[in-house]
Length: 392
Image 1 (cartoon, rainbow, N blue to C red):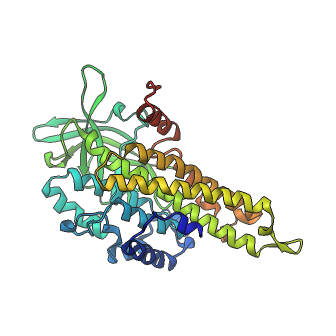
Image 2 (tube, rainbow, N blue to C red):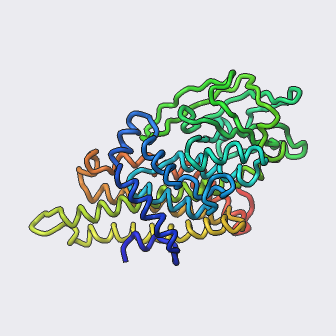
Image 3 (spheres, rainbow, N blue to C red):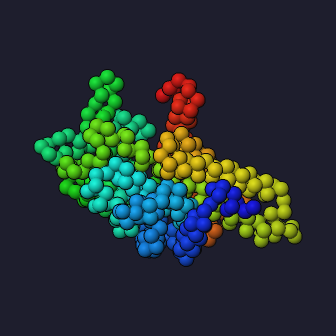
């Protein structure tokens, strides 16, 4: 069996096989060099995105009545895996289809669904997501950005931090505090749609990073930004219930990026060590080369199993928080290891742009920090999975 087949769901349907082949064919016409050039310019992969949209592949998880295919997170994960395995991991798909598409499909009003979901499905309109703050990273209850009523409107004031792709989106989801629980002191949160990223009172500042992805990172400053009443998604003061229907897909898709990049890296390394001759034989002859690659492939296949379980649970309406976190934990480590081993097997060539490996380090390493850190994943599973006392 190949590493590709070991990373598949146990019984892929014919439709899933066709979806994989179609997306792999599209990304294969662009290749990793396209990703690298767009990342260097800080520009989105527009041409690739538009081709995916025209083929209907951006809307696989959106309900049919709103322009999608009516499938689920499993199919969206397949699309992202093949993009990543083709050297083009697409963070925008996590934010727009994975988070916004999932939240709006489950919690949006009928008017919101009809307004936004067709654009998400076609790729004509992109969403990003604004949750993290300088003093509220993993602790979402500590969000300090306030939204206060002003007649029928809401006025927003505060700061968001490390917001991806705000410079190339059409709308974004905003998490803001609209009250405080008098017993716990935790924030009561509400989810809003900000229709225009250039709305009066909103300013942004670029955060220089070593990430090396097409999506750049920004700090957002809200200075009395006015939002209409219809901008609220779900219930006022109960935004967390809607939010987690976006955060669990985000964790699964974060894992999928690592799975796809891991596949990409191992495939490149295996080809290289078969061709690279030292002392008269291919370096792939030696166990010192074979064993690290094999270990990385085994760990990647194990992570894939948890990814498909988590996606299936989400699609069938089962609680997916624990498996989504496990999938992210396993895949973020397995993908990182696969990439690191592949770089090592290339020797000095592993650092050359020509071989297309080292420039993916940032986006794979990021997945151990965001959208939730490895340590917070362990805290969650220890508390909710093992029943241990809360440790934080």
